[in-house]
Image 1 (cartoon, rainbow, N blue to C red):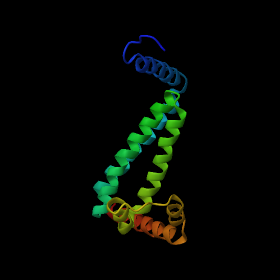
Image 2 (image 1 turned 90 degrees about the vertical axis):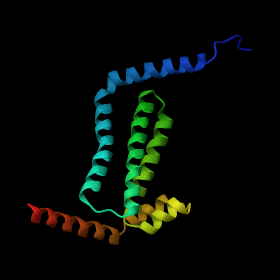
Image 3 (image 1 turned 45 degrees about the vertical axis):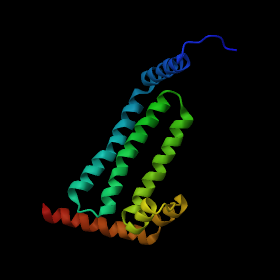
Image 4 (image 1 turned 120 degrees about the vertical axis):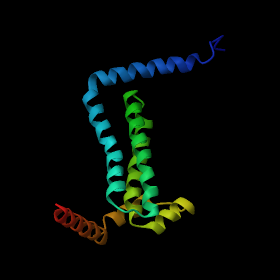
Length: 156
C-alpha cells in the first residue's frame, strides 16, 4: 500500500517534472523551437492566402479548417518534445504528415473529400502518395502554377 497521499499529488509531481524538462529544453534549443513555431504558423498564412486569392469550392473551404488542426498538432508536438515526451510528439507529427498529405490529395478531388468526411471512407496513405507523385498530378500542378504566374504578371 502506498500510504496516505494527497489527492492529485502524482499529477502535480508529473507537471513539475515536465515543466523542468521544458525549461531545460528551451535553454538549450530555443532557436530550434522558434524556427519550428514560425514554420507551424505558415499553415495560417497559407490558409489566409488561399481564402483571399481564390474562389474555392465548398470542399476546399472545409479543407482549410484542417489547417488549424495541423497548426495545433505541430505546436502541441513541439511542447511534448520540449517536455521530453518524444513518442507522443512523434505520434502527433505522424498525424500532421498524414493529414497534410490528405489535404493536398483531397484538394482537387471533391468526391474523395466528401466520401472521407460524410461517408466514413478511409484514406490510404500509400494511395495518396501514389496519386500525388503521379505524372498526371505533377502535370496538373505544373499547368496550374504556370497559369498563376502568368496571371500575376498580367496583373502587374
